[in-house]
Length: 394
Image 1: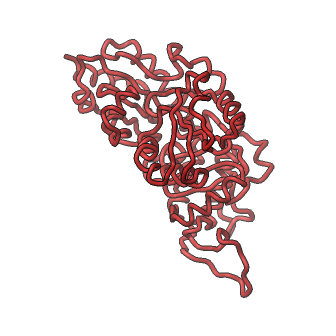
Image 2 (image 1 turned 180 degrees about the vertical axis):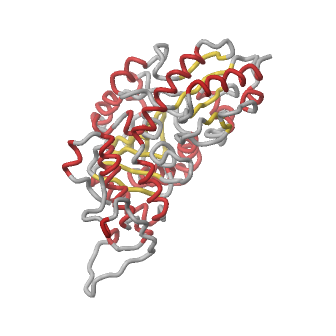
Image 3 (image 1 turned 90 degrees about the vertical axis):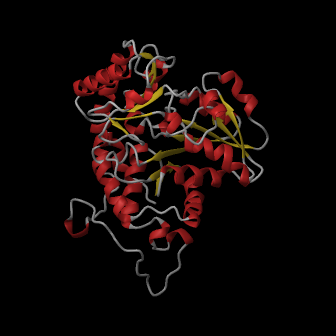
């Protein structure tokens, strides 16, 4: 775990994405960080180190880990960062460090399905409870807090309904109740939003998605103040959520083009959202860049662009199966944030583990389609959506 060099904080996000965290002086004058494919490292004859400082790959402290941690801390403008084996490893390790048996989490009422399943079905096994809040109704938030509440957990842009968190209001609320603020910034990426600058204590990512950007690895990132990350790293090392050095290398490479990719995806997503919003086969579009989005003004104020994620409801008479089975360019596939445009039904993918009652409560119906906009030409994507909607029509 490293801290970004101070001089990077005055550089642009694009420059930080390329250079921050790099090894100085470079190994053998390399421009690209080598892959340190070693499970263990030699120690000095007299060696006295803390547990997390033992040079061993499971401890997530190889040179490849250190470069990534420095780069991510610079991108999210936090004191430090940790990289680990997946987004869920980042989420569960963080929550299991901050919340003990008998304690309580206050969480947004719409979350990624994996997170929701952990809260509903796994957290109780550890004696951890939670209460859900509607982010659009701040007057009701206080009722969810009790004497055992320790953490406020939200997503910058919610999966899959594209709800927008009011970052400043949430931080103010959490501080008034002495809650640690944790936010999943996967859908936004630091290109769109840096929640730590609004006061959030810990920022999480599934780096599998936008940070890597190439649909070829799984990784997670935890960014925040050193005092929070030190115990999280210890718990992570105990649980063994290790990211291997080669995946570190790939993730660092992906990060170098992060700003280019996300800005392009945001631009294309807005074009597609506007087109879908006018199509007779679409009952409604969830995208913060649309004027019709209930939190469009808030998103405009606190974001730089609106990201590449959207969802929409097919009209009742349209067939989701026919729609998803008729693409030429777009892929019917899980995950998000890569160069390929992907479409899924959240009820059968990201939220498949939830019960029918839980899905109904969240508004995740069979005709809800989630779109991760890729790097293809916008006109080609419009053409593909057009022919797929025609194939799905009654």
